[in-house]
Amino acid sequence: MSKHIVVIDDCRVTLAIVTDMLEDAGFRVSTAEDSVYSNHLIYSSTPPDLILLDVMLPHMAGDKKARILKSREKSRDIPVLLISSKDEWELALMVEKAGADGFLRKPFSAPQLLNSVNAHLLH
Image (cartoon, rainbow, N blue to C red; front, side, top):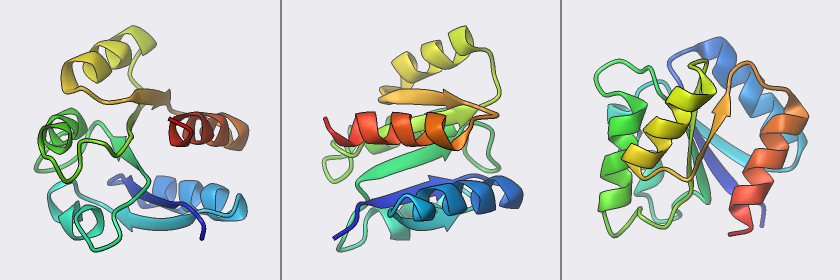
């Protein structure tokens, strides 16, 4: 069975591009445009193998959502990668503070996305 990845981003273009890249590589993808309304994807009977989480989101920022995910027993072991166009040093600091597993800086290519996803799925 293919790995399941949840992508949370409020930009529909980003969701479409990332979904295409991941599905072309053989992943199953579920998407949400808001971190608050993504719990049904994360806490389902088949939780995701990895979460790609945009930092700048309506209602709840991605780094705050990552902190919540990492504090809950049901989701703490799911790798979370923050995605943003912020500077690398700022993203690295956000990852550290939120307890996320890594980051991917926008814009990214398909190889960059797949390398990052695959590296975190192996852990």
